[in-house]
Image 1 (cartoon, one colour):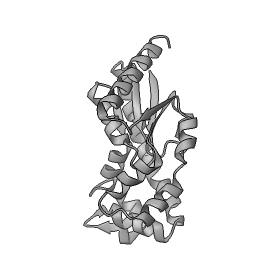
Image 2: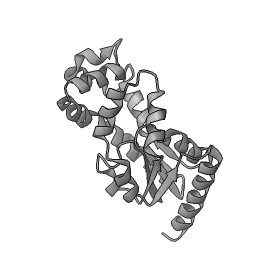
Image 3: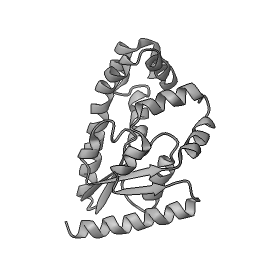
Length: 200
């Protein structure tokens, strides 16, 4: 089974692209959704995060907005949080891939926002990067609720630049075009990866 890592910087259209793979029956693991579940009331990350950042806990769950604010105020907190959360997400990813293999899937997609930043790009068989011009990215990002120029610049400073991601990609998916065009590109990639899986 081929394992494809899907990534892209903030507001590049990764979530929409990820849905296109899932809609075509490809197993997709949503890492961001896994973090949401880990941060929810009763989630495995709540207790360890409460030790590191007690002010981020609201009603027994991790408030991501509060946590993000704390990280902006103290960037050293980020590594400590990641050291707790990333292994928990990794464990879920491993279970997902095991189920996909058992089900006979030709390939599976790990949707990982920080694929390059965490070094996971070295562990996947194919790298899919979702991309759009910088002005499109900024326009999309600043339309999000609670997003500010300062917050966006802080996030971008933490992410591997888009041109570096594109340079390391096996496939670059352009999301600055209409959805139908992006969907056709996704369909082409699926066909190629299925064919490649047959020759493994």
